[in-house]
Image (cartoon, chains in turn yellow, brown):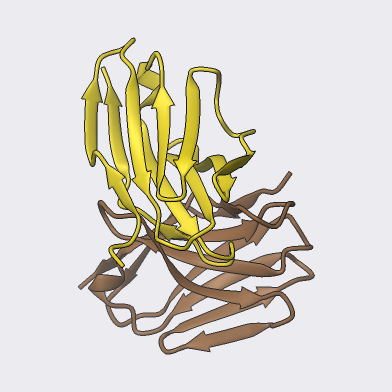
Amino acid sequence: DAGVIQSPRHEVTEMGQEVTLRCKPISGHDYLFWYRQTMMRGLELLIYFNNNVPIDDSGMPEDRFSAKMPNASFSTLKIQPSEPRDSAVYFCASSSDTSKLFFGSGTQLSVL
Amino acid sequence: GEDVEQSLFLSVREGDSSVINCTYTDSSSTYLYWYKQEPGAGLQLLTYIFSNMDMKQDQRLTVLLNKKDKHLSLRIADTQTGDSAIYFCAERDQAGTALIFGKGTTLSVSS
């Protein structure tokens, strides 16, 4: 298996633009997690899904952030409109039983 | 809520032992984890320990768990330059599903 695949690897955009981050989990994994990593706050859990259903989105910072999982092999995290403080590395992770998470390589987002 | 605390930096010489410490808050955590992040990459599971264990050894890695003090440590014996990375301690959230990570300890190994 190729592991968790995230795209794009890098995204540079201007304030106010819409940003969409994509994730393909490992086949057969029922859980999908979105984390955000910054120097100041470390790794923060944004939202996670179980069998494509959002279970806990309490970590989503505000209404500008939304996440979807239309099927078992694809998830998106959207920021609209983006702001400079959203600049961070966004990680997607998947798991079959929540005891071990497998992370993608992350998307480095820069909002100018 | 859950909280995981770690020191931010550790610097050692090649060949020395490294000890990375972590404190956590949720005494009901069944598993505690150590993840490693190399530059430009995602996190990889390094090792984990079940809460009914005091110690787990895996080659150069030794995990010690003190449940009374909610203290977890990771010892790396004979540290190599390739061990330079960020090490994250993690516990499960109260729902027992997601992982809550510390801010990570940056290990720098000099030759």
